[in-house]
Image 1 (cartoon, rainbow, N blue to C red):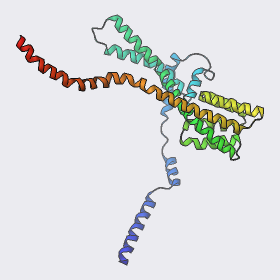
Image 2 (image 1 turned 60 degrees about the vertical axis):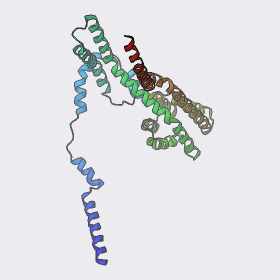
Image 3 (image 1 turned 45 degrees about the horizontal axis):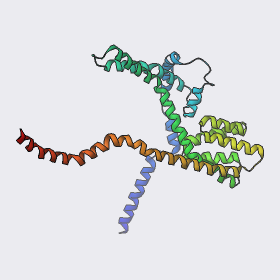
Image 4 (image 1 turned 90 degrees about the horizontal axis):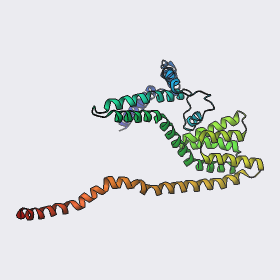
Length: 299
């Protein structure tokens, strides 16, 4: 029995040693990553190809002050070459959509109908990038709005624990990243601006502009007024966090109240015909079976 236990111990030890030797350490993995050949920068090549197409539809004027750049920032698109892809898509998609509709149209379609279909397809292709960016911005703003009350509660807890506002924002940015990466990223950028020497009011104003959420703009204004008037930031945060939670609850109730209205059309088109068929089908079959002999005799 002792020999058998010793053999099991040696086998398990040998297996563990083999796994330890085969599994690379963190240093070895870093060395392997550094030793790999650098992949080709496909993004730079794509940007180089998209540049001449983007120049055909890009408006003239400074990009840094344009409303479209602010929309990109609020949508979470931080790449500098994103505008090239955007305007290149606005140049190519109308032509592609119009060509596809022109090919798929039947040959017997009238000229006026063909022109109308091609024009509608070109317009859809032209505005498709706008819809995509607008959808990304709405989804990001909804995520930030839903998690911002939790961030204010965390900030209130941090300040009541003895941290300052700047240290509390840094701590909240670390903790809120588990539930919302977008909000954590914006708070981290605000902390970086504060470390770089930007005033607190200006950094909070930039936070409100980057997110585009009205509640964050009110939060920045509240902190600015509390700092200017010398009132307690903790008391202001407590009242404001309660108001944010109430707004989130009201918005959830509003979305829940819209559900019956949104379900009305699928119910009418998909479910009610099936129910009517199941309920009235056997009765209709019985009526037909009963009336057919009578009609046959009458004929």
